[in-house]
Length: 530
Image (spheres, rainbow, N blue to C red):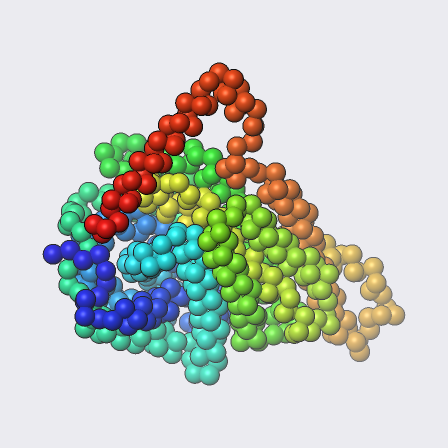
């Protein structure tokens, strides 16, 4: 009646692994919009780019909204029925995007795609984690694969949009989802994962409040610059709506017997410090907006060349994943691995600070993008592992949605928006500084256009350098914090000495030895039975 695997017993193990990899390849990069072709979608639909930035955030919000209920959804339905329906719906939503001209439809489909995608992902987590065995090694392999596929998908989204049309990429994704649904209808078993559980315990109002909280926040991040922040009534109303929705969500969790979210884990030391480190990771990831402005606006790259820069991150991502697997296999403390990730991000910021000039060659991108790839992957793996370490499954699922939204949306969105605002302000200051070189001798009717363009480009470079300078200064503080943080190691050894004097340490050590011996006996007895 129950089967914890995904496929029929007659399907060979290598074929099962191949099918899982195919699912990951298609589903993990899938979204309502793709960073590689946002500009083509905006120009094709005639809508502002901010709408599609909003849709990009909505995918992450949908994933976070699904996380607290994903295990209950997994246990409610048969594996094959659920997987086929999800793949068909994902294919249908991609087709809707391919044929739509309304930006609000992209936002709605992106939200639903994120919600459905997380249900598919949890089906792949468990068998892969069972194969690999160690959670840290699983993160090392999984995040490496996912980040590589995201860069590849962004590149091919731009490539297909240039060669054919932005709609063609959505049609290709839709067809792939339908093909995978057909394949899994053949190979996947039709049994339940475990004891069937009801769905009426899910609090759908809490999910709605969760979504509204962050959707309104995403609107503020996306349209803040375009609508002049607090001078806009829409931005003020969206901010108030986001705050009220979160307050209602928090109050509702206190009154429910089975709350949708749990805030209990946020009292834990490792969760608090993990969220703090994820926040500063967002500071470095948010530099993508500055990088795009420099590459497209100053160097004049087309969208495909700009998307190719993301592909240059892949060697660094793969190296970080390989190191993570061996690091967790040897059970080495995480401190220096996390330090290496932030150091790589610092290296990227320092190189960009000194290299942002009009004569920047394409080959100069190799080293900074390698460092950025290594830093991104290593910190996604290590900080995520540290944040969720020693949490029970129920605790983790009840709060992981908030942590996911914090890592991928709030931190990155906050800094991207902040950089956008500062870049505009610093450009005005830079133009004022450069104005001292403008007079009748240097600017005349014959060369005014060339001079004005040069001044504008230099102002963009100056503003980008200034932001990178502040990032570097802040980054040194982050590195000092990493070096001084204990990462779970006991900081005050003299307490143990006091316990030895009082005789309590001897008793505690004896109890630990007895418990360890008992656990080993249980394992020895259970091994032959399994």
